Amino acid sequence: MNIFILNAHQPYPFSEGKLNQSLVERATTHLEAKGHQIQHSSMTESYDVETEIEKHLWADSILLQSPVNWMGVPWSFKKYMDEVYSSGMMGQLCAGDGRSRNDAAKQYGTGGTLEGKSYMLSLTFNAPKEAFDDPDQFLFQGKSVDDLFFPIHMNFRFFNMSPLQTFCCYDVMKNPDIETDFKRFEAHLESQYSL
Image (cartoon, rainbow, N blue to C red; front, side, top):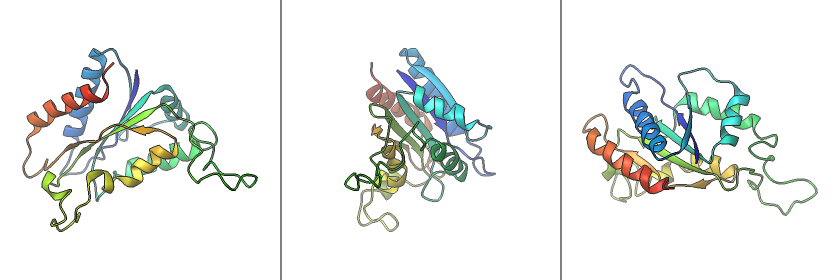
């Protein structure tokens, strides 16, 4: 399987990106040992839009490794989406939104050309696991991580890609358990990318 790993981390003074980079490195080592081919892109490096589109076309699956900044992805990955994904709307990643003036019955968002490809979100949170899926919690009010990341899921669905199970490291700043997270991550990769 060809797997394209995107590291969406944006460095900040209080967060250098070591955990996200370590997860990218562990994913690469684990998946290559299982016979998968890997390509990378990082938001801390420059990129060429056409090359990034080619990586998406090459990949059987995309692994998005990202911290959660203000309830979403960092601005640099949003910029990447605006540049790369908008350029890919001319038929490489999707044929527009799937509708046309000649066929008004087609549903919005059905123009994706990447059927058969999958994606996986791997996220690092300051929020504890207990903040999700519990209606008594103040901020998320019973919402799940995938509810919070619904817009990112929709971006990949717009290309007709299928989701793999989301992975999360929780409470990474105030109560980290990184070694356990690494073990869980490798088990998660094994379950999602078994040959």
